[in-house]
Image 1 (tube, one colour):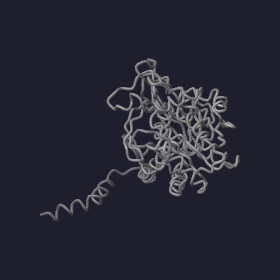
Image 2: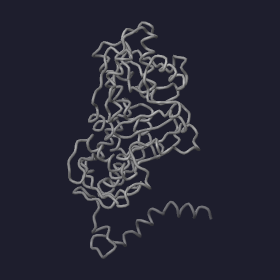
Image 3: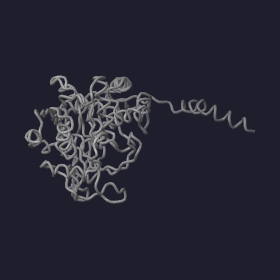
Length: 399
């Protein structure tokens, strides 16, 4: 590993990767190229090119991957209704394979020997990045500074940054580690390391507190085509633009905040606070769209596999044969998930008001409580007796 000439570093400009950039140059005496993915971080990308070069990077890539992120990573996961441990909509997890994919493309373009990342030896991201790297190029060299250096705390990193004149956003009084993209923003560290302590209001970025949301409900309509959202209130939008608009709508109505303790892949529990306003609205709308367009047995079979699907994303197996198999199955279920869902957004909650589809399997003639000519209620007697047969035999055998 000492024979490293050129490294491509996944660079956010935050505390960890700012220090890593300088540390790589000092430790390996190598050229470092930074790569920053624009996934919708907003102002976090401002001045990143200049900052990377001032810290020693020979070149700085900042690539706009927003449309690819939403179209090819977020939407496939939402077609599956993927959710980890009942709450987490996988905002950080789903971004890592795309970052790794583009990082490896740059490494090939630049003829780099190695790639590097800022994930700690305690976290999930080291696994997600490195499984993706190795799935793309089994021979790539990987430098994970958190597993090598003696800077074993964020306090030590801030001291290193100060010594080398590297500006970083964290301070000892507000040492949150954040990750933001178009799907969500996450917060870890600092006061959040005590699972009993409440997150402070000044931490939140994408949403207002529900009690300060407007007193008047906001009604919207989301149109779907084959499982993907394509329009809001009749206005067709690209994937990234649509998700950003849903973030605005959900955020101003106080929707999408969660505080959870999750089980990391490496074995420990970790507390995180997440804001996912648009994703929270979108998932509920997609479920509503499926409710009238998806066959019962197809839905139940698909749903039985979704915990595994979500785990694969969370654990870093996006580029795996099992994920490819499951995604193909999920996408087959979505061929008729087309129509419109009407939603009400109000003070931290979103509600389904209605749904309609030309592909609807809901038939009022069968479902009505009024008189009908298509359903014989007498048939239910035989249905129940046949389905109760094993129960009756079991009880009879006990006598």
